[in-house]
Image (cartoon, rainbow, N blue to C red; front, top):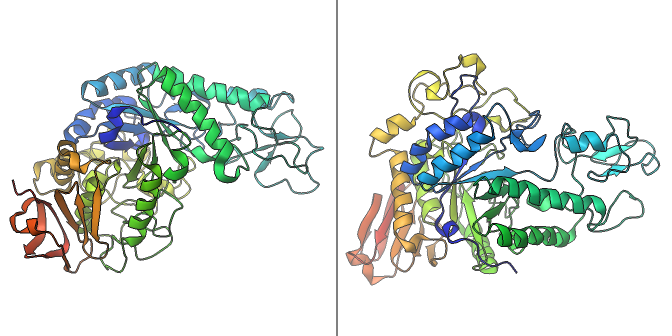
Length: 520
């Protein structure tokens, strides 16, 4: 069983950067590494301690970089490998670590490995079926006919341009003779290649990886047994060679991923109970964080408590505001800006590792009706350029507007970093204060206990037996009772519309409060 990882992760505040859309310095309309370097002071001021970059590697960009053609070289649109070194060093000076996106379930069909594999029938780096192995008629699900001299078909993971790397199958099947066992030559070569890729970037100073679709490497793997063994092997290697580095999984189930060797996993990113995350819903129209106030936080709290108990102190559960894939933001077009502060109060005081998607800290919104770009397939609506100021293109780029990777939010009143920094009452300044509070008070850390009083409205809980947190994300006022005599002398640390009378706690619509029950 893996041991807890490096100490820096325990109080980390993660920030996801979609590099195409963060900051452009060369006027080509696409964000770059130099742009990230230019804005590190914003992240430092905000209190971020680690950034995760979506893939920055050489790619034909049929899936926005999730189709890697060279794992060891930066795509020219972003800069070069020396820019990674500069970014790592500039971030380090500000107390920020850099994590890269590790996409190893598949490559681009332009990767040299695949170009060789489609020529050589003995190459087992990818999953190939010979013509004799294929059934007559339509290809088996997921297979694509060979684009080269090699006869037969290969297995894709998502788009046809993303051939699946061969990490083997957990179970043989007579009707599918292309299934290699996990210890076959091809899977062994690919596991070694993953270590080489990680070692290359870790030696350049990055602090770890977010591992894309981490549960999908070994095929037909009930219970993820063989997938878990694969990642445990990676973790043992990492602990020996780079003990200060971390692996964060895109798995969506910390009870599976953390025993498999990951230091952290994103909770409810997909799958999980039908409430999704408490402020977004993939399958329901009444999430808890909604102005109608028809949901319940009980689904989330019960699932989190169960997962947290199983994970224990072996790793961390991370709670993201959103990400590049789910095509959502806290400001989802139906939610008013008044609803955003309670969501952040919850996220930054709950015992998880918070992960903030770029622009969420100022309340950037979803933009509908954007054209598909590089395989975005509907996900483009939360990938618009970062809104820095009220200059041309919101300060993202000096390129002509028609050359931007995606257009800027057309609302003339769109939020910007510049305007919100000047406003003490802004969402941005609230997020900054909450991060500072979290970092300065161990009671808000992911290992500190939480006691939940009420999962209806308002959501009410105690952190570290000292700080009472109340959150009311609906438009109507809400009231609850808290049986704690310390309420009489409680001191407000953050408060918008919360009053305490005896044991009764009343919170205005979209209100919140954080109270120090020590009264000091």
